[in-house]
Amino acid sequence: MKRIVNAFLDKLNRGKRAYAVVALCAATAIALPAQTFTTLFSFDGTDGLRPNAALVQATNGDLYGTTSGGGVQPAGAGGGGTVFKITPSGTITTLYNFCSQGGSLCTDGAGPYAGLVQATNGDFYGTTEFGGSSSGCYQCGTVFKITPSGTLTTLYSFCTQSGCTDGTYPIGGLVQAANGDLYGTTAFGGDAACSFAGLGGCGTIFKITPSGALTTLYTFCTQSGCTDGQSPAAGLVQATNGDFYGTTQGGGAGCLPYSCGTVFKITPGGTLTTLYSFGTDGVSPLAGLVQATNGDFYGTTSAGGANGGGTVFRITPSGTLTTLYSFCSRDPEYCLDGDQPVAGLVQATDGDFYGTTEYGGAPSGGFAGTVFKITPSGKLTTLYSFCAQSGCTDGEYPEAGLFQATNGTLYGTTYFGGTNGDGAVFSLSVGLGPFVETQPTFGEVGQFREILGTDLTSATSVSFNGTPASFTVVSPSLIAARVPAGATSGKVQVVTPGGTLSSNVPFRVLP
Image (cartoon, rainbow, N blue to C red; front, side):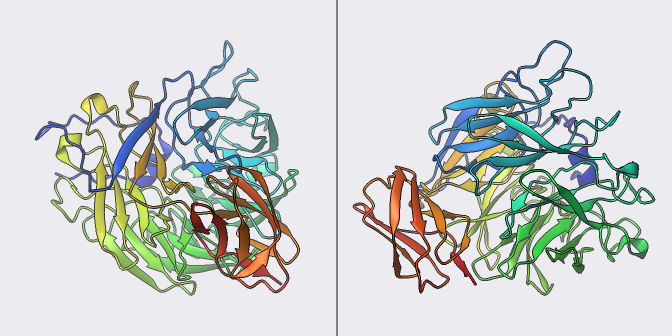
């Protein structure tokens, strides 16, 4: 009988289930032509374990990420997780070990379950679900800043306000907005009168300055029946209209009293609108949204749908939702096409979306999760089934989403598996070529913007939607360019001896 799980409690309880699965055929990778899967690194506990978040590419060309546990700790301290960087070829460096300051509360934070964002100042910002300096509150969490070389500063400890009205459990990551501030969510805290999964408060939305001044913008479950949502587990995305969009794993007007989750938008000033309440079309969206090049948003629900295994959906900025795919449609007993997409999607340069499911896949791999591709209209292709190698050395149970680096390759992590069973970093080449990425993807005329890419040393020209721009080659992976007068929103292009590289998303020229 197919597993029916409570996706939220599974996410919250990091003690993973062990499943005894009988291999039905020889272990063979599910691979398509022109596709190469590579396990780049296997964690062993001392350098971290259980990576749970997507990677991000920095301006130096390397990838940065977090592990939710493990790391080298002093006597008497627990394995609070790490921040690491890894080259595209797989050389890893541990930059920081959380809970390294000693004591039982981990004042510098513990359990960074979300990924990082590199801000315009060059530093990375992130959250830890646990730890912080709040008195007696190990489960409250922090916001931190870390330099590319590994110097960490704790910017904010949650539950420093009476009744934890500022929030607790920041599970989701941060996004830097056009105004320079960072925006995020907490899964709990806020109004203590609300309780979800036995924990106080139903979550908040906050903004925090790069220096650490935090403002709570919204507290969930302020509407009768929590129709505005409960407990957001993911971060936000700022849309081209300037508003933020996100999901809550509970609450909403659908399937009460069990609360199936919502999609919402919120203005930078804190006015929230519930756009959609899930029900029979999906349950518990644990991941955030991605705004596609067509202007719509795409996301996943971790469970529910026509077959109970979760869904992929599209939703317009005004709230019209279409279910594109319901998992467990191929052999519902074993979910050969995947089961429980707990992570979000990434739109690659071919226009298709790529993602992972935590379970399901080929029986030869023990149903240990998949990588899939889905077109904007909903045609799904399973690209890889994990645990296809003996001992699951290729990884198993991918809880994190994918990231496309500027070399065209997709990168991701698995929560378990690898050579030591503590998780792995992998790459998947699907035949997509190199491109460039602007950081950030918006700016005013006259502002300098960084352009990230590969082999940029001999670049001969840069243009913003066809308008030539002055530029300086900083390194093989980085160009600094000034947004030229007369530029309009559109693709950024860099001409190199090897060809013309276009940006993966349009650049927005701000007023």
